[in-house]
Length: 120
Image (tube, rainbow, N blue to C red; front, side, top):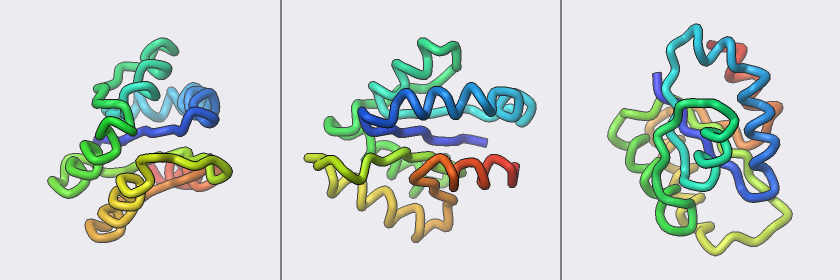
């Protein structure tokens, strides 16, 4: 199973903390992680194995959206910062739309991500 992880700058530490709290589940279920570049760098530094794609503003969100459309990605955890402006917002909206089109679970905050992890 492949889970995509993305976090806006103000949420990256929260993503790392979330993954640390769910490390056992990730290992037990043999889950592979794929991420946008900067999030992946932080996650890798925390000791997780992750396939890093481009940074979000440089196309990483679009790369993950493509993986969703191709059926490679089974879940997306995207800790968004709703209080900041993001120049790549069209890519974010495209990713969210494709998750809906392809019926891929998408969590945009830790509370929803927690429920998805419990479902594993």
